[in-house]
Amino acid sequence: MGITRQQLQKMALQIDEVINLIQRQQAIDGILPAEVCPVYRESAKNLLHYATFRSFDARNMQKGLKQLGLTRLANSEGNILGSIINLKIIVNSLLGAAPDLSKKEFLSIGDGAKLLVKHTDELFGTNTKSRRVRIMVTQPTEAATNYDMVLQMVKNGMDCARINCAHDGPEVWKAIIDNVRKAAKECSATVKVAMDLTGSKVRTGSIDFTVQGKRSKASKKKEKQFIPLNKGDHLIVTDRENGATLPEYDKNGIVVKPATIGCVPSQIIQRVKKGEPILFDDGKIEGEVVETASESFRVKITRAKVGGAKLKGEKGINLPTLDLGISGLTDKDREDLKFVVAHADIVNYSYVNDENDVDDLLYELKRLGADEELGIILKIETNLAYRNLISILISAMQRKHLGIMIARGDLALEVGWKNMGMVQEGILSFCSAAHIPVVWATQVLESLAKKGMPSRSEITDITSSVQAECVMLNKGPHVNEAISFLDEVLINVEDYHYKKEVLLPRMNWN
Image (cartoon, rainbow, N blue to C red; front, side):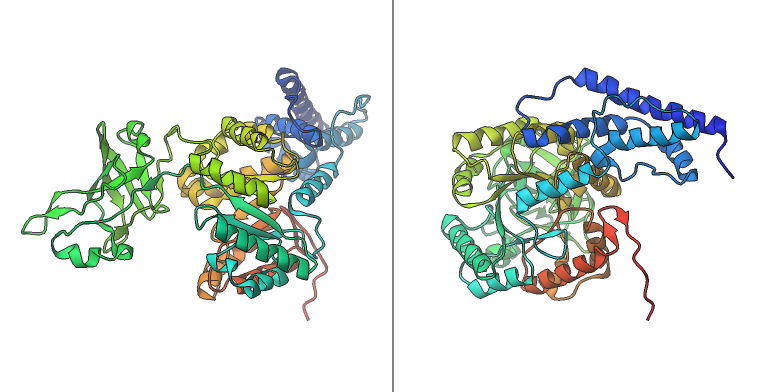
């Protein structure tokens, strides 16, 4: 069934409504901050246009556009106002009218994609490979002494070597970087070095039990020390980093005194509220805060592995509904940043929550005299960071080379498993609007890297990862197999996908 003139007129009004909304919001937002780098000024404007567009419910308009066989604006983030103006031209032409285009204050269709490619090349180096998506690989400690392993990583397709400052130290980091630089030169390849600042992650304290009854022998080896937890158990979280104790039982095996474990940093104890959900060890253990005190809080375990979970020291704690008031650079980060500025190409900023955290990093980089060519990648891994994404991006646009990492592990815990797909799509869309490259991270081909065999869901995950500009692999004994496999699959998938768009090459059934 065709579209009536009345339906076209309604659509034209909806398009005008969106354009007017963007123009009104642009007048309210006013001039962009002077600190925004010139290379990002058009991108920053487009980001704000897209944010305004997303405040409008465009679903009915999209349905009408589909009936006309026109773009539904689902892939128009990079030049949103230009795409809407283009629609205005077409719809008005069908109505026998012509729009006033005397003022061209928008990116044309295709300009956004070109800017994204440009910004990606500036962050990761000019792309000379047959695939668009880059590969970032986390370096194990062994990379400091095993040059052949690093050389094979480069040969297999590694574009960026990631070093996590949470592990090892300057001597090992320098040795890894030297091997990466040497291997890149030997292969005539561009391989950037990115270093992760540890950040202000909340963790369980260390566990070092003294002799405690029957468990004393098993407790002597640090790697075997843990607190056993079952659904329905209680756990006391204290402000003492080394405050771990095992539960105490009566003669019938009933817990008479709950286990305790420390918390780092300890100041979050003061911010925790009764009734709030809490997760331990990447969400393997879930609980609810049932009681608070000045130096501790009590948790009731609501989900744990059948047969009992083992909570170990230095495992992550997530309180997804709370603003814990801990962000920005830690003392360790500031110290590590001195090495990063001197040796790396990119600094990965962990646990950024808002624009103040970004300003904290930018101030420190300036204080250290960091080269303007040093890139930054902001890791989005908290619910607060997702809610503040637009202001984070605008603040970060003070730097020339910029990227965003979707740190899917912690982020999924923070926003909830059921919301993760929507949040991930949101980050990809807003970064496309800002023409900022995205790193797709956490558990990519993890089974292959660690065990030598990928799972079926991991293959599907790679197909989805082409929406980003870079995919990150974690370390494992089979990491070189994972790099080679990812390189090959990405090349194949990119024949059928460009970011979110499905491409339709000729099918050959033979």
